[in-house]
Image (cartoon, rainbow, N blue to C red; front, top):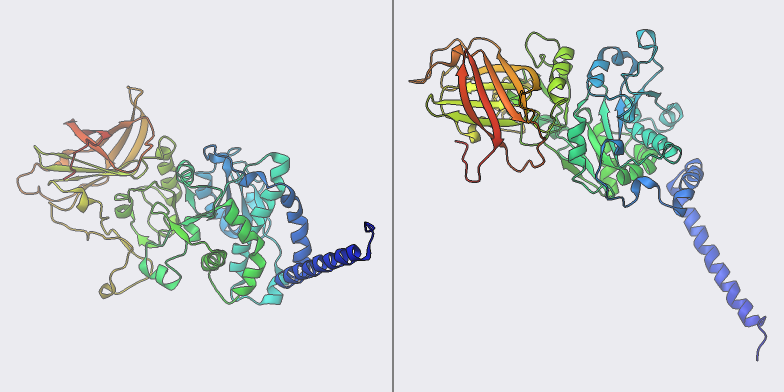
Length: 484
């Protein structure tokens, strides 16, 4: 019987060690070429623990997604924040929402002391050396994209000690208005352990053409699942080098995500609002999708009459505080005896038309707004949706009412929203229909329970008019009900 220390066995062991050594060299060489030396070392440090046990945020936890699973990353500048913080404070929930506002420099003047009503702030990383080495076309855009890595890094460092369980990163600007309950409901429909990039396109066709139809516009906000945010953070500096010649932060983000193998999942409730003027027509005929965000509210007329942009935002949030599932959802009903049609955008506006009109027509927004960039009329289409042109025909022009207030109805099972007339319509009646000019207010009763299913819109019944106040009651549509 041969010795256990025979030369053959030593030779076999030597070959095995040579093979393992060669594999290790190739692995090191590959990583060293993919990452600069400093990045390679930091990569090993950051991921060594995750090689032993996966971070809790990507565990296979099947519990329903809630607000504690979201972190918000907001990009702003110290200069702009003086005039924009009211937008963020209208929806931010101190001690409940998690996230940070990334500023270009420390706050000064009346921004201090920093209030609890604002998100905690961070100063963006100093990228001077990176910019000097790579000479990007738009340095400020690099800072904005880089913030995704910065918030991922911060959350990853905080997770073990604060027992965080982050599933989604919600990125936005310092004037993004978010409807957080709806965001939670929408994200709960996705598997947070997969790779998802959820965002909204621009309303303006040319904005999508100039940048990309596959891009989520950052001011409207976009959402990244944890796995995607991690992959993006790991490749961030390499991707910023690859695309240093690009000039748009949103486009750079999109191409970096595309290189990971992920494409945009568009959502119609995410609104960049690349429009000018009066957007009431759009908000009064909102798509049948949960309202997720509004942007550029300081670039257009205030959305409510006799209020400025900040007051308008806070006023809209009064309705949002009661029921976000119905926010801006369009509900239509008819009073056949008078030939009236009511169209209600819950929490925002109500219209009366003096003729019976089908939902297929009313779901098209009245074009009260203008394109983001001046465009000749011959260059239509301007928008990513169909529109109706304004009309002075008494059978087509509505009586317009805007949201006044919200309260619990005497019956605790209902919510009462009221809408007051904006101005006289100033036209005669439509044909033989009674003129609705005498109606000064519309009262809408809706169920106090949130809508769990959005496969079909709600219907409503005309209750009556008393003392110039019309009354409507929302309900689920009947199985065979036609809204026409």
